[in-house]
Length: 186
Length: 186
DNA sequence: ACCTGAACACCGTTCAAGT
DNA sequence: ACCTGAACACCGTTCAAGT
Image 1 (cartoon, each protein chain N blue to C red):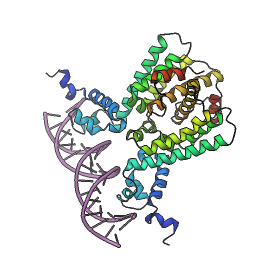
Image 2 (spheres, rainbow over the protein chains, first blue to last red):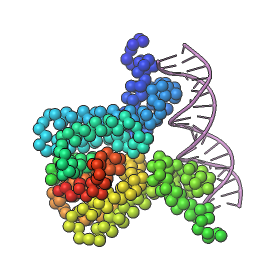
Image 3 (cartoon, rainbow over the protein chains, first blue to last red):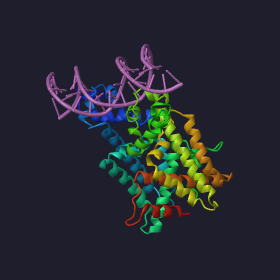
Image 4 (cartoon, chains in turn brown, blue, green, red):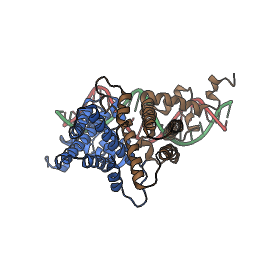
């Protein structure tokens, strides 16, 4: 019973348990819903217990965002590896798809609250993810760089505008068709 | 003295005074820094006084975001009116410039915290601003619509990626050159 | 009509103390 | 080494009461 996985919360796996609970709440209620006291309650520990594993609420949020960038990075790498990168379309599609599939996580990854207190772990995780993009789109001339940034900006903008429902879907068209239609533009 | 502007806080202009103080704090510390008790202190009223003018903190944030969309809208209209809209470049530039000039406000306008509690005033203000864009870029065919959304997404993505310093500036190049270079892409 | 004073529930965080 | 209990400062919000 001392090694029972379901009872392991009190025995060394509190950090993981907090992060798992936080991910669920993040997608259900957004960043504001992720409260240390709530997480402690959900995992049946005292309000002070999380401080053994995270310096602050911001540190826990950073850990979540890092997890997000790692998953994001992995997804982009899988797509980049699975086919010839003639066009950026499959990569762009995966980018937008990740945002729509993990709205809470994606918003946290790009949250300005977090970026404020200059957390190096977050920046490293973000840079690693974007390195995949840069590698695929490649090119060192200024023109190639501008073209790559242009593509990146379009994909990122599409993701956040869709996420916040600022783009109205035409009648009868679903999101996938819209993404394909936009990414097919020159 | 009863009509002295500098002493009018206590006499009917508390709403405006709170919003002005909030705008300053918003740009200085971000959304999290905008706290009702702080605003009340800054304006020398009791913690309960703001509730005569705003139902909640969220209502005050909404009012700020509405102001933001109105200023944004006005800026886009000015640019659209001041020249022939052959290309979307001047409009795109104004879009990005507004974000960089008003980072706190722009982030709040597109904050997901606010969109959560479905505030109709915010949506109306946002739609009014985007109507200017739609009008300029026009077109009712699906191809034209996709082209317009593609342009919008690129400009919006460029704004938020620059705001969050995710786009690294090449050595010796300033932001203006980068914006021009990206918007010059087909 | 608009503001104050005092209170309530809640949160992040700290710290001494327990096992 | 890791967690508990109790406390502190702070916040959003409410409500009776003041002018």
